[in-house]
Amino acid sequence: MVASRNKMRLYLGYWWRQATLENPGKYHVGLFLTPKNPKNDKRTATIYHAVNRITDGGIWKFECIPASCRTPRRAGCMLLGKVPPKFGPKDIEEILRRVRVPSQEEAEEEKWRCRHWVCDALTLLVVEGVIPELPVSPHDLWDTGRIFVESRTSGIPNYGKPLYTCNTMGEEIPSEISALDTH
Image 1: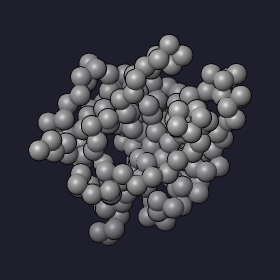
Image 2 (image 1 turned 90 degrees about the vertical axis):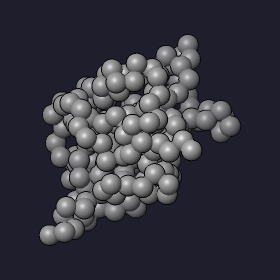
Image 3 (image 1 turned 30 degrees about the vertical axis):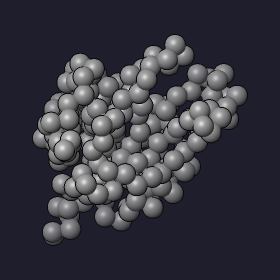
């Protein structure tokens, strides 16, 4: 029974980003997986997201990377749920590699962004049984989290307190991700 209480947690994460004319949003969005009560000083999280870095020619790609749970760029998050024990980080990566990432031309034509990847990923994660059914559409869920993070941060980073965290209804919940150690 102990194992069921210590399941991995999957979050929808919001990272500060520089807004542009083409993409005025304040946040990059992706998913991250952590153990229960993670330590910030170690790479105990796995980030899953779609990125288009200038250094890579602006081409969108899926990325899965180990990371610390709390970083200066992480503004807040939404707990999507506890992950069933049969799904480890590699299993989730394999599932998420199936989510469409468009070519550069398609992305420009569709005005495709990381939030579109997240919405498709959430749908697939529900179908595969990684997370429970969503209370609203993936887009509305993304927007609920964005509104929550914006309401808590008002655009100002808060490193001295646990990471702002909400549930899938947008209600603040106690965070398992501790304050950022700035010393």
